[in-house]
Structure formats: C-alpha cells, structure tokens
Amino acid sequence: MTTASRAVAPGCDPCSPASGNHLTLTQASKIAPGRPSTNCMWRWCRRGVRARTGERICLEHIRVGGKIFTTADWIEEFGRRLAAADAAYFESQGEHNGDAQVQPITSSGPTPTPGRRRHAKSQPNQEHIERALHKAGL
Figure (tube, rainbow, N blue to C red):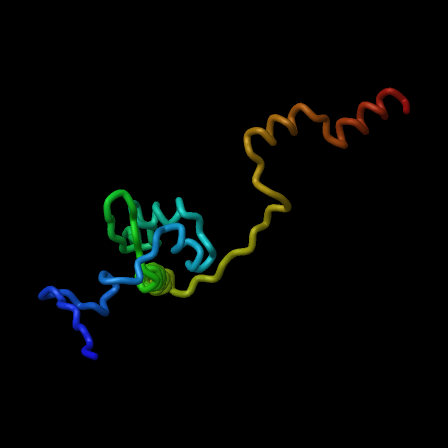
C-alpha cells in the first residue's frame, strides 16, 4: 500500500494559519476571551479597536465568498497587539507625568446631569420645607 502525497502549491505552507483551522466569526466568538458577540468580532475585523495610543488594531481575517473567517492564532495575536499598544501608552504616560499621585474625588455623589438638576430644582429641599413649616407655625 502506498501513501499518496498531496501536491502543495509553491509558496503555500500547509501549516500556516491561512491554510486551515479557519473559524467563522460565530465559532470564533465562542472561543475568544470574554465571549464577545459575533457582531463584535465582525467590528474587530472591519473597524478594529482603538488602542489608547490612538492606533486602530484589527483582527486579522480572510473573506471567502460572503463569509469572514479568522483563526484562534489570529485572535490571540489581536489580543497581544492590543495589550502591547496599551502598555506602550501607559509607559509613555508614566514618563511624562512623573508618577503623579491620583487625587481622591471629593464629591459626595454622582455628578448631577441636566435631568437631575431640573429634578432637584422642581423638588423642594429639606431646608425649604422646614422654613415653610416654621413660617406656618407647625
């Protein structure tokens, strides 16, 4: 019994990610860290993610017909590139800020939004109620 060998086109590496183990974006979303949605995976391929440095990091993919495919290796590489870009940003910020300490927030609550401000104006506060009661003799 003889073994048949498959011919490989010149320049094609049968072990490269481009030659096999492709995943649809639905399959990829199930193995990606954090289990992002299929739509999220599509956005990572098409638009990428803006790193803190300002550059866009895209998930490597191929398109065959009407489908987009990626590989587990490309997902891992995408995460590493994004983390490296963020690390470079934080390193540069540490050099420019001279290890400045973070100031504590002095506000006792959330920052009032315009809707909360309107609501606060329409609702009488405790002091206003007490003055009205005192004035009425109650």
